[in-house]
Image (cartoon, rainbow over all chains, first blue to last red; front, top):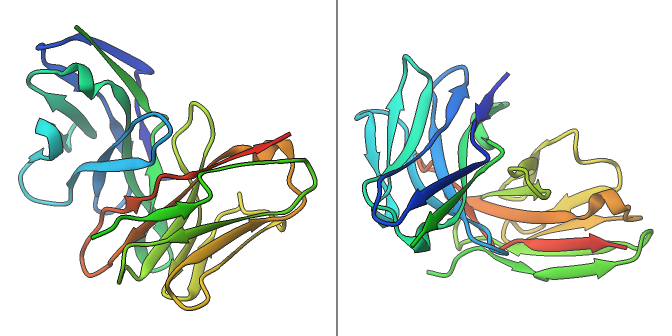
Length: 116
Length: 114
C-alpha cells in the first residue's frame, strides 16, 4: 500500500540555524513526492516536488528537499530558519487510482517551531 | 491568476442538518479533488473529478456524502444528515493535468457539527 510517514510530530529550531523535516515513503511505481506547508486556518501551500532528475530539488521560500532512493526518504531542508517558517509541514506522495497517479497521500504532518 | 476558492470558510450546523460546500478551482484546471482533514492529521482523499466526470470516490465518502461538478467548473460537496464525526476541514484542490503533478489547494471549509 502507498504510504508516507513523518516520524516527528514537532521540530524545534533556533532562528538562523539549519532545519530538517523528515519524510519517508513506501510507494510502488514512480515516487512522485511533494512538500506542502499549512499556516493556521489556511489551506495547503505547495512548496516543492520531486518527479525525476536531480535528487536535490529547490522550492519556494528558500526550502529544498533531498530525494534518497536507497533510504526511501525525502527530507525537507532549509539552511537558515526564520521565525516566519513556523507552520505545519506535510509530505505527500502518489496514491494510485485507475489510470495512474492522481490523488495525494499525506503524512500526518510535522509542526515546525522556530524560536527567536 | 486567482487561486482555488471555497465557500463558506466556516460552517456551524446542528446534527442531522444538511450542508453544502462550494469549490471554484483555478480557471482551466480540469482536475478537481476533495479532501478531508481532521485535527492533527494530514488531508485524506475523498473524491476526484476530471472535467464533469467523477472518476474516483474514497470509502470515506459514505452514502450521506455527494459531490458534483455539473459543468466541469465549480464543484459542490453535500453532506446529508450531518453527524458530529463529520466535523473537519474540507479542502478542495485543482490541477491542470498536462504533466503538472502538484495540486493547488483552497483555504478550506471548516465544518463544526454540534
